[in-house]
Amino acid sequence: MSDRKQLGDLLVEAGIITVKTLERALARQKGSGKRLGTILEEMGVITEEELVEALAKQFNFKTVMNIVSYPFSRELLDVIPEDLAVEKLIFPLQHKERMLAVAVTDPFDTETLDYLAKQKDLKIIPVLATRKDILAAIEKHYLHGKAREHTLSKILVVEDSSPVAIIIKVALEKEGYEVEIGHDGLEGLKLAIHQKPDLIICDSVMPRMDGFGLMRALKANTATAHIPIILLTSKASGEEEQKALESGFLDFIAKPVQPIRVVSRVKRAFDLLKRMKS
Image (cartoon, helix red, strand yellow):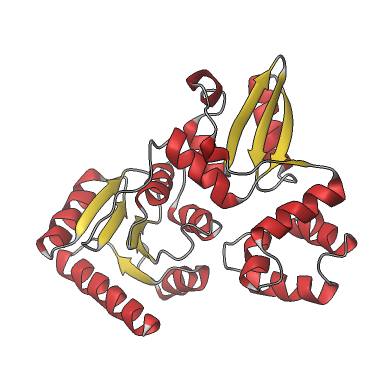
């Protein structure tokens, strides 16, 4: 079932947004990698809290707020693997008998809920929460605390080839940047949520989650949507560059990796970001 049928049409039917507003949101969503709810929030049509409240009222969902303040046992957290919690933005709230209450941002994501029910042989009870509440809980209980403060520009390199990742890391550290490495897309997503880097460089082809999937996951979360991303790819063609830029990447670096080129593109990216903020 599409986002429009799952969420957009339901919001229209509930009188929360108009058909024209939905059409504008869907047009902006196309190619952005962002969820419809995120687009509607960016348009100023509805806040995240208002969206949760409206959906809960209209469709009789329970809600939960300030999840991070509650204690959760290790046994409960283990019911939902860390990777799944981070990738799908879900969080276990209570496990009782054969039922599991799960905090979700999108209760119409039946694919994830059905998968969890089948894997754990449990009845899943979705409970609505905002993305920021779920992210805060994930940071504290799965990723063990919020990101530390840093003064240097921090760059996250997500690359499954260790030699390539090390080449990039060494080149950038020589220029004074602080560099963290993630060895696949899903690890990169967790590090991005945890570390809040100033820039991400990611490979296009990686295990568990490719570069385009990582970009979509980052752009779908308000906590990481602002982070600029540069794509690394061995497909050095005009079509690939166009695809990368249209998909939301800030820039494009062709392989094989040349340290001088990487440093040049990173400096260019930060200069561009400064001009955009000024």
